Image (tube, one colour):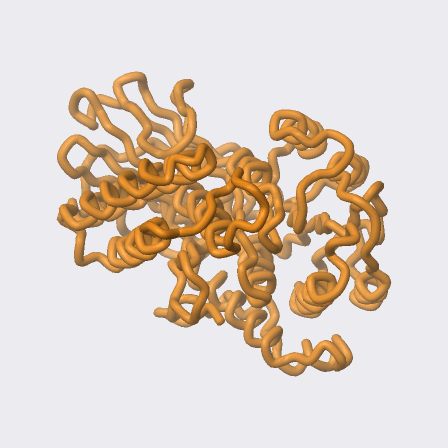
Length: 466
């Protein structure tokens, strides 16, 4: 079942899509009733960078997080583990048995260079035998051999994942290729995160795992007429906005600017319904033209879109060594947010804090910029990594937005209440566990399985960052 509501603010027309689990009654907006849900085994691919730079704490953290995922997953879920370094190794394929999976994780070791091409080709080989519902790609470095350009990797990815299943990406440390991983996430409408703390890994894994369990639709797209201009980041000139997967209780917004009345612009949501256990039908739902959302709600989403575009501009300015331009762009963003009618909204409040911290870091003296001689201060590199992941979070509305500076501040989450619950469960389990303790014992003692998302807390607190 999918609820669709619309709203306007000045010349902006907003569509809010809220999927619901099968059996849930929705009384507002346009709804489509799905078939009764049945057990639906999922196949998750884990593509890990096991190059030499992952040796030590990074590999330890990766192993601990993967062990927690294995213990928390529903028994019917299947995992494929692929490690890539100078070449690729399919460590375990299409496996549900936890003992076999844990043994494969225990055997992980680091060494060699970083050849993502080999990993994607191994992924393609498995996908041809056993189609995947989602992939989680993790790397800490730049590609050192094989195909390495954004366009080349994107082409390989399209070949490896013709079903366009989401490929979630995590960058560890300051040396990973921000542009490449962000582009992969954007291309597949997925989550991209910069792992600025060890607890980021279990939080992302929890988000992905819970999202699979609560999936309502695949390959969702919003089709609109030529009189509407999509305001969301990206190229939508063909009149199609790609949403990706639909997750129960997770809102997805799409904003437009219409040249005439929004009621004269035909719009349709299309998606593959998976509520019956498999993709059983292509649903087409007309978008209602009677606004029910408040102008404040629409204005808050306009602030999200403006910040996503502004953060992308700031990254480009910094990369091109135009710090004054980056600083001015951030100032303009803050002015826009302060003038918004939704300035008191919690979303806008968090965005204001983001931009304010960004201004503080961009204010002279900030140290050497990227592209300058070696030795530039790490904080600027960290800021760029956070900007990259935050831009994708605001654009794709997946995962969460981290603060510009490290600390224990709250993060803005674009996850459903159920996803947030599993994020907290795995993060708490990771924090409380000891690397020396047996994985099964520590995980069973503290991890709530993904089944817990069927009864999430009604008002979950935002994700805390350590």
